[in-house]
Every structure is written in structure tokens, then in C-alpha cells.
Amino acid sequence: MDDALREVELFRVRLPLVAPFRTANVTTAVKEALLLRVRTAAGVGWGECTAPATPAYDGETIDDARLALRDHLLPRAFAGAGLADVRGHTSARAALECAVLDARLRADGISLARWLGAGRPAVDAGVAVGLVDDLDTLRRAVAAYVEAGYRRIKCKIEPGNGVAVLAAARAEVGPGVSLAADANGSYALDEARRLFDDIDGLALQCVEQPCAPEAVADHATLVEQVRTPICLDETITSATVASDVIARRACDALAIKVGRLGIEESKRTHDACVLGSIAALPGGMLETGVGRAALLAVAALPGFTLAGDCSASERFFGVDGDLTEPFVIHDGKLRVPTGPGLGVEPIPDRLARCTVAHERLTPRG
Ligand SMILES: [Mg+2]
Figure: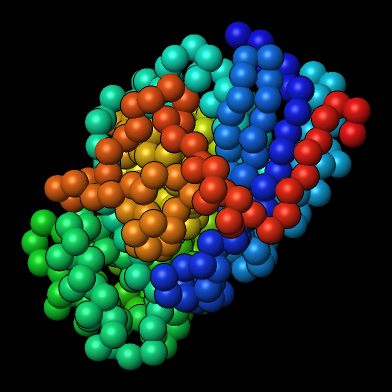
């Protein structure tokens, strides 16, 4: 099928979150995303750029992504050239890859999950709980997510706000539900060691990214010295990096971010985990339904042996706040879309309501 690119529309959207979401590095009250609607020789496809509004996560921002698309990625794609000479900008590249692939798979009548060889019909639901000011609020939130059927509860932590958070959450999370933590790289090695001394008895599924993304040797030290599994997230910028940290024994598990790596690189990263006998979990970026559909298709691959960040739309956007028909929990799981391509697309009036800027780009500029 011909992927020749004829037109790309960029929709900058703003979706208010049901409540501000706080991590060690940033608080998000409104989800901003860049949706791509491409028209290729095959037809129309959608992709979502999940780069956040600020550089607090991995440096790439939504504004960087827009400029990278407009000035570098799309001119090459319109010319039918490869993108091999563009480094970085992985979220921008991932959105374009997804949209072009979606157009092709829609034309071929094949779902993304089937194209990937991902046969699982549904994926364990997981949720991230942001930092809050008091532990009663945290306990109530965790209890509500357990009640809603989530199979994994992940609490954001930061130095000075780790042990108490996790002990409070542990009291609400019983057998059959995984409890995890995510430090978003906020601990120095000594602080992390002290944290693990206090939480190694809590039987956590894992702690994501205790130390900085570049601190591979520190993570290798922790893997050797602590009992709780170490999961790398921000560190994992490619399948090559994944293979490297696995070889260096710097992790027990990997969080694979489809929105950040792209679909094919996520599959390669998943394959590196399988080859290295390392557990993988699907990592979320507060995606709208468009990005969530891609996340679920990839998460249906067999190497994703741990529950990750696949949340219902309601978790972030409320019952009717997502751009697509909402993803909902059935028996602790989210169904993997089965329709052609992503199997979902934005509902036109919701997209119109949430769009704050729109650009149409063609080969003629
Ligand atoms: Mg994480």
C-alpha cells in the first residue's frame, strides 16, 4: 500500500483533567496534545503526539514537536525521503509514524494489534496516582481505584514523600492488585538506598525510575543491593538503550512508552525485553483516546507481563471528556481495539471543542 503523504493537519488540543496530576517534577491540570490527521495515498489516519507542555519529563515539549514536524519531519516525508538524518524528536516522529500506519491499516482492514501480532484481547488496567498534600486524600483515591477494578496502582513519589505514601497505599491495596511507585528520576543514589531500606518489605511490583535517566550505573547498583524490582522508564529512549541497560543489569523491568518511542520501536524494545528475559509494562503519557488505542494495541504483545499504565478515559478526562469514545474497564481490563488501524478516531464535535489551534500542511507548504 502506498504511504505517499499528501496532507497533514495538526490539531493542538487542550483537555482539562478531572484533577491536577502531580509528579516529582511537574503538575498538570490540563492535558495538551497535538493530534495529526494525515491523508496519504492509502487514505486518512490519526496519530497523537504525547510530548508534554513542559520539558520536565524527558525534555521534548509539544511546541518542540510541532516545529520538528513542520520544519523537518514533514518536509522530508512529503518529499518521500527517509527520516534517518533527524535525531531525537521521538514523540513527533512517533505521532507521524502512527498516523501513516493507521491510514494504511484502515485501507487494508487490519487492526494495529493484529498487524503487530499482538493477540491478547484485553490488557490489565492500571492507574497512576499523583502526589497529594495529605495521606487521607491519597488513601481515598487508592481505595476508589481498587474498587473500580484497577489491577495496578502506581503512586508517584519524591524525596521526603515516599515511605509514608507507599505505606498508606499498601494499607488499601490487597492481594491480586499490584502496588508500584514512580519517582520520575527524582532521587540521588544515597536517598534511593534509604528509601529502599524502608520500603523493601512492602512487596511492591516495582519502583519506576528512582534515579536520573542518565544514571545507569546507579540503577545497576540498586538492582544489586535492594529487593524491590527496579523499572526503568525515562532512561529508555530506544530499543538499543533497552538492550544496553538489560546487558548492564541496570533494571529488573522496563516501562515502554509507545507515545515516546513510536509503535515499531516499542515493538523492538519489547522484543529486547523478551530476549533478555526482562519483564515489560506499558507506560502511559496521559494519552487521549487516540494515543490510548495505540498503547493498548502494543500492550497486547505477549512480553508485557506486568500491568502498567493503561487507564480508563474517565481517570483523566471524566466520563465524556475524552476525544474518542471512552475506554472503560471490564473486569479489571481494557479491551484492545479490534477495528481497522487504531480502531478509534476523534468524535468531530469533541475535537472541535478541544482544539485551540489548527494548521494544514501540504507538500507545497
Ligand atoms: Mg514512569
